Image (spheres, rainbow, N blue to C red):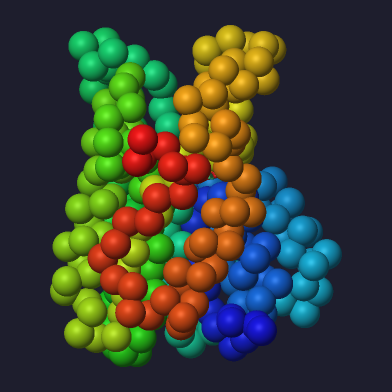
Length: 259
Ligand code: NAD
């Protein structure tokens, strides 16, 4: 079954990790895709992978910074200009930022993380929701984190931004359900992507794989999640099968949040 035949989906952070994995799942299921990322090389890589599994897929690549409101309005307008509608939006681009105790957390670093992870998600919702409301249909999946539903430590900016994403999700879900639009968030635990590799390298450089093995020992499943496992979840949540799921935060973390 191809759940995304004739569907138009925007993915931010599509050049790597979770955004790339979700893109590949959506492409395999027939979606027309607008792929957004700051990193143009990453976008090209994702485009090549899409071409390998779904050669017929229509793909529009847009290099844009989600922390820039005009740029976000720009990719939403470009999507409507090219495809005439937006069925799904994976509002996912984000950074982790430096790890530090709260007292050592610089305001510049704090604001940098919040401007991408929270302002960026807000801008995306603001412009996409306007389109979906007029259509009377659509689904948004925002990427929060386990760090958006409980404390993980050393991540003031990240925690504030991801808790904020959960708040935006719940608030807008109440506003837009009446227009046939559903809004959900996902809360991934540790999923092995370039972002996680980078944070393990912050702890111990070339020894990061060993650090990773220790890191996942407390997880009930004793492993990292795979990006494609998140891709399957996102595709389900963006599909019409999940239209009545609204305002929720879905953990995907091997049980880490429920220990
Ligand atoms: P990643 O670093 O592999 O991919 C993130 C992508 O977002 C990159 O391609 C990057 O270029 C892009 N990006 C960053 N800032 C941007 C900006 N300002 N504008 C446009 N694009 C930008 O990381 P990932 O692990 O795939 O993370 C994706 C999302 O998932 C993030 O929001 C992250 O916080 C969240 N998350 C990841 C994990 C995990 O374990 N990997 C856990 C919880 C939440």
